[in-house]
Amino acid sequence: MKKMLSLQLVWSLAMALFLMGTQASAQIQTPAASPSASVTQVVGLTKVTVDYSRPSVKGRKIFGDLAPYGKLWRTGANAATKITFSDEVMLEGNKVPAGEYALYTIPGEKEWTVVIHKNTKLWGDGGPDYKQEDDQVRFKVTPKRLNEKVESFTIGFADLTNSSGVLQISWENTLVPVKITTDVDTKVMAQIREKVINGTNVTPALYAAAASYYADTNKDLKQALAWMKQANEKDPKFWNLHQQAKMQAKLNDFKGATTTAQKSIELAKKENNADYVALNEKLLAEIKNKK
Image (cartoon, rainbow, N blue to C red; front, side):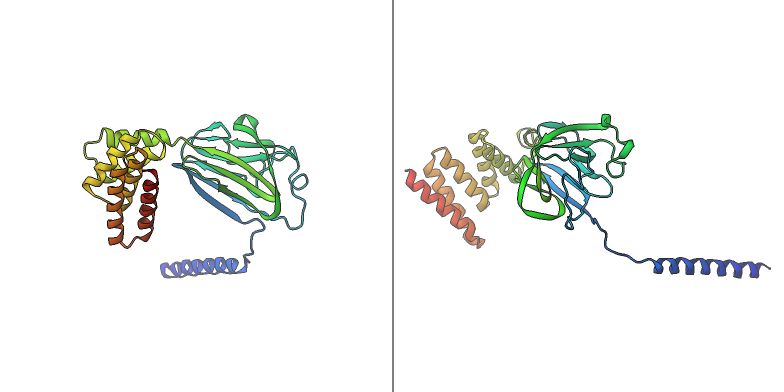
């Protein structure tokens, strides 16, 4: 009796697996009308990720028709577009805390409203479940007319700097720019204070990084030079020596800059780095003209 029950159990399991396989093989996979996409960009020190779907024009009139003017739009297709910030950012001057949000827009012929919404669980434009009180922020931007048509809806990034970038929403003949600004200086300066100014075991790499940041952001150039010298005294690198030479030249120490640039050339040649040889030779020519 037990043997018969065991055989029946095995047979039942085998049939269940067979039916599951038959059902799976009966399904046909086809391309999505609006394929999903994800784009990630580091802006300053902040990671920005957008997850969205990409419908295509397919000969249709989009803005003012398929996406009506004055009506909340999911900014893509299928589920609402989601945007995630790893740190607090400013969007067109509006503060947005770190976190994940739904990205809605309200298209307009001459002006768009961008909506950063805290409820990310809604489908499409949210319908009756959308509540404006759940908006994190709303702000207006000016769209741009494109000469060439964008067939597939696209979200990307452009005009990146050390602390900012532009989120671009593009479809049909319209581009909508959203300026993203991040607080880089506060974060970097906190690291410099901790690891260099108050550090107990400061490596040449840390000295060089702090020096480069001070020089690039027009802070205390004399302090930057002091740190770069400390880096090169312990572990001279041709790229750091080149930076030191540029700092010395800016401080009108042309003799010191010349010596440092020549040493950078010597090390760059040993490493077969023609680019830094050329950079230093250009710097030496500029110094010669200033003397």
